[in-house]
Every structure is written in structure tokens, then in C-alpha cells.
Amino acid sequence: MSLAGHEPPPFFRRGPAPLVKLFVLVSLSLTMLVVDHRFRTLSFVRQVVGVAIAPLQLAIAEPLVWLDRSYANFGALTDAQQQNVALRAQLKEVQSRQLRLQSLETENDRLRTLMQLKTRLATQGKVAEILYAARDVFDRRVVIDKGAAQGIDEGQPVVDERGLIGQVTRVLPLFSEVRLITDKDQAVPVQVERSGLHAVLFGAGASELEIRFLAANTDVQPGDVVSTSGLDGVFLPGLPVARVKRVERESADGFARIVCDPIAGVENHGQVLVLDKRAPAPTLSSDSATSSSDKKSDDKKSAGGR
Amino acid sequence: MQPTNRSSRILQPVRYGFILFSLLGAFALNQLPVGRFYFMPDWVALVLLFWCVREPRRVGMFSAFLLGVLMDVAFGNLFGQHPLAYVVMAYLGAALSRRILWFPLSQQALHVFPLLLGCQVWMVLIRLVAGDEFPGVTYFASSVVAALLWTPLTFLLLLPQFRPVDKDENRPI
Image (tube, rainbow over the protein chains, first blue to last red):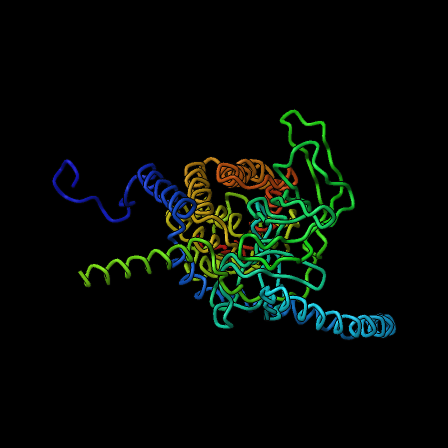
């Protein structure tokens, strides 16, 4: 296509001009950014490519896990013995408490049936192991070794033995990602246990949490334990989440700045429990929907009657 | 004779297989779960930039885009964050390749550093616009380490191209 009417020799042919290529590829990436951030519709591509590179990731991660385990097996025998003694003592204590708990539970059940309250559903969960922290340094996520193949679903709460650590936000076939409660985008509806105050807890990054939108004169003190309120229908009520570290009341916008520390080992690695989803509670809207549909059917019946 | 990098030295042509192998190796190195250890360089960016500077006609923006997509999936980033940063870096690397290769290795590293830093700045900007947390200034330590690794990496990646040195007076080159 040169001026002379014949093509240039092949070693001068370099495809489209670099600037053109740059603009095309940059605009393609920008489109991908907007589509992924706004509409979240690229998860299909993520799944496909994720499956393709999963063997490589496993091949890299697995030896490190073995190394970690073998160190734990051989290097820490004395630690294990000490731990055993401590755990035995703890077990005795817990057993005695368990005895009391059983009697209390039966009593509680009786009282609840007396009060015609619904008994709280005991939920079950799956034990998973945290493989590694996600390499994305702009938010707080960890990768666990259970995925869609093991029945993990998006939105499931994740706890460790002390309290809530996060929520499953992305499920790949063999892994899933848990967004920690310290992530900036993660919000948990909570209740201050001492005063019964409802609030929303946000991650603040750097292993800290923050309760926002409470008035400056609110009844929160350092040392208060904050647990899930369960108002969202996702988290079970009563899971311990955080302990208030400091309360700053002299803020310009009239809200108190309440900084908390997570109770669970949020940024530690180890085994976690992925809780099953809560059974959907009968909400007001569904009740009204059924009643309205009843009304409609009544109307129809009456219409048919006429 | 030790391998040198003087411009007088004549290299064998690069093999596609080795380029692919080195990029794959860099991708595997990036999979190491180091968490928030910021002194780990972004190996893919470094090796990609090396080939963009060295072989601008073989490795370019399109490979940068593909590698970026792979990285986004592997790291679980926002989709498009790595491709954008890598494509811009590959463009600048190829555009400056004639100039960069003129310098000795230590000064090449000085040229390469702003490109790697720019790559990280792009990613920070994208994520800040998307509303995520700023990881701290130490985050940029990664590209400093990467620039320091430029010299050893050049030796390592050019090793397969060094012609075995046997003195032959009758050979023209």
C-alpha cells in the first residue's frame, strides 16, 4: 500500500503504529475497569482464566504449605506438649461450664416456648484453611482452600474460634476469597453489648475498625464489646466482632469517632469456619406480599363469584 | 571470558521459547504468597519491561495486555488495573529502547526505574479512584528493588544468547 503501488518488504512491516495500539489497548483496559467496578459482569472471564492458572498457583502454594506444616510438625514438639497441658486445663474448665450451659439451654428453650418465641436456629459450617493473604495490597482479603466445589457460596460469614473475621465475597471453583472486616468496603451491622446500642461497623484498614454515624454524646466507652446484631439477615446475631479501643468526641461534624480492635485473629492465618447462610427470616415485605396475593386471589374469587 | 554487555559484543538471536519461559517464570514468582511484604518486586513487570526494551519487535503492548489480564485474575484485582499499567509501561519501554540500550547497565537501571514507578503509580491512582485504601509509601519500595535487580537480571536473561567465545583469527566477526 505504499505510494509506489506495491507493498513494503516484510521486514519493514510492523503492524499498526505504536500510538494507535496504545490508545486501543488503554481504552480497552479502561472499559474493563469501568465494567468490572460498576457492573461486576466480568466474573465469567475471571472464572475461566482462574481455572486455567489454578494448577500453577497450586504448584506454587502447595510446597510452602508443606514446609509450614512440616515445621509445625517437627519443630514445635515442646510447644505442643505445653499447649496440651494448657488445653487440658482449659477443657476441664469448659466442661464444667458446659454442664451449666446445658441446664441453662434447656431452661432457655422452655422459657422461649413459654413465650412462644422462635428458637434460634443452630447453624452449621465448613472448616477451611486460610492459604494466603491475597496479593492485592489495596484491600484486605484472604484466600481459603474451599471453593464452589465444596459448596461455598458468596455472602457466607467466616468466623474463627474467637469471633467474626469476614465474609466470602468471591468464589472460584477451588478457592474462595474472604473479605476481612478490616477492609474499607466491609460493613457489619453491630450492637454494643453493654448498652444494646445498634450501629454499623466499618473497616478502617491497618487492623482497625470504626463505628460510624453515632452522635458525639453516645453511650460507648473504651473496652465495650461489640457483636453482630443480625439485622442484615446475613450474620448471626451475637457473634463477637470488636472491642472499643478509643472514643474521640471532639469532632467537627458532630459524630463520635469510635475506633475498635477486632476480637478475632483477623490478620492471623489458620483455620476458620465458613458458616452456612442463615435461613431467610419471614420479613414484613414477604408477609405483606403473601397477604396482598391472598387479597388478590380473594378478589379473583369474588370476581369469579360475581 | 565472562559475559559482558558492551555494545561491541555480538549476541545470538533470542529464542521465542526462552522469552515465553522467562515470562512464565516471572508469573510463577509473582504467585509467591508474600502478603504485604512490599520489598518483593513485581517480577512480571520487570521481565516484561526487559524484553520490551531488548526486543521491542517481539514483545510489546499486546503481550503486556495479556500478562496484565493474567495478573489481575491471579491477584484478584480490579479487572483492567494491571493491563493498563503494563501497556503504558510497555509503550514507553519500546519507545525509549534505542536510548536506554545506549547506556551502561547501571544507568539503564536509572532509566528503567521511573517506568516501573510509573506502573505502580497508575495502579495506585486506579485503586484510589475506585475508593480503596492507600497502602502507604513503602509500597513503592518494590520498584526500587526491581530497578536494583536490572543489572543481574540482564546478565541472567541474556545468558542463553551469549556466543561461546572461541578465538578464531580467520572468522570475520
